[in-house]
Length: 252
Ligand SMILES: Cc1cc2nc3c(=O)[nH]c(=O)nc-3n(C[C@H](O)[C@H](O)[C@H](O)COP(=O)(O)O)c2cc1C
Ligand code: SF4
Ligand code: SF4
Image (cartoon, rainbow, N blue to C red; front, side, top):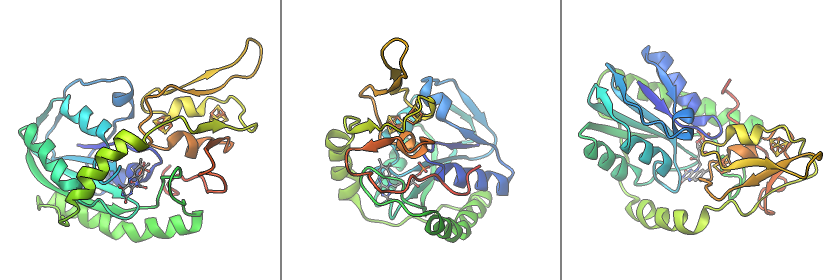
């Protein structure tokens, strides 16, 4: 079974492509994470966790969900991390998760996809994004084939410091929702509330007037709200001004 988490569609696309090629099932962890649902899951096919890279590691929200959920049946577990440039030493940590769960670690493969971290980096225009996804497809299919034939996934070494020290600093100092603001373009549609995987947003406003999003301080910086607002009505301080809102162009 393929378990995926995705803020802006890259990991969803990769998970579904692997599932389709291997005749496997892709399960979106969005509801499970949102509802803190740790009910047991069972699979007769190897477990494959597909997620974005956050500060050179598996997102902690996915790690914590995995650690709290019993996976029965097949004992092999693969990790596929989508990223803008590199997953660095993320494999050192996914290996630990597998070991803590008593599962057989089968490697962590990076897939370079378009950058979605609009709060920090420039996001690609649609055409450039499409080219990056096109280039990734051969790699995704190779990963799927390796999983199907039971091979260990290729893993690049190194990056221990980034994945350890920078990741710690990232969670301590960088992740914050204090800079999110809405502009006059907000229509109170509620899409940002619906796409937040940790129920961090609610709409608020005076009686009889349009309500607007409020962020509650539990943000994991997935960038779903800002990128998926249909009216581009969310900004992250000045950083996101004039940056393209990103959503994987091939995710349906
Ligand atoms: C909070 C955050 C941290 C990120 N950290 C990294 C990183 O360390 N290395 C990297 O190459 N890309 C990084 N990215 C880019 C994403 O991993 C990449 O765009 C990913 O494919 C997005 O997947 P999604 O569309 O499934 O959410 C980061 C993105 C976010 C939002
Ligand atoms: S998704 Fe955008 S327009 Fe809709 S409520 Fe949120 S900020 Fe406003
Ligand atoms: S509030 Fe934070 S966690 Fe929720 S969608 Fe926005 S960026 Fe993601």
